[in-house]
Image 1 (cartoon, rainbow, N blue to C red):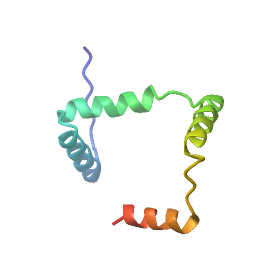
Image 2 (cartoon, one colour; image 1 turned 30 degrees about the horizontal axis):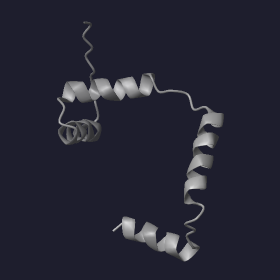
Image 3 (spheres, rainbow, N blue to C red; image 1 turned 180 degrees about the vertical axis):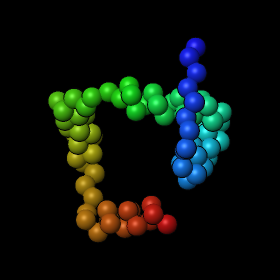
Length: 80
C-alpha cells in the first residue's frame, strides 16, 4: 500500500483528529483514512431521493403535530 506523509498539520486540527480517533476507538492513522474517504468518496445528494425520504417522514409524524413553542423548548433543552 502507498504511504502518505502530511506535514505542517495545525495543532488544533491534530488535536481534533486525535480526539475523534479516541472517541471512535481507532488509531490516528485509521481516523485520518476515514476522514479522507468521507471527503473524497462522498456521495452526491439526489434531490428526488431526499424529497421522498422527507415525505415518508412527514407521513409518519403528521398525527403528532408540535407547536412552535414546544419545538423551541426542545431545541433549548437539547443544547444544555
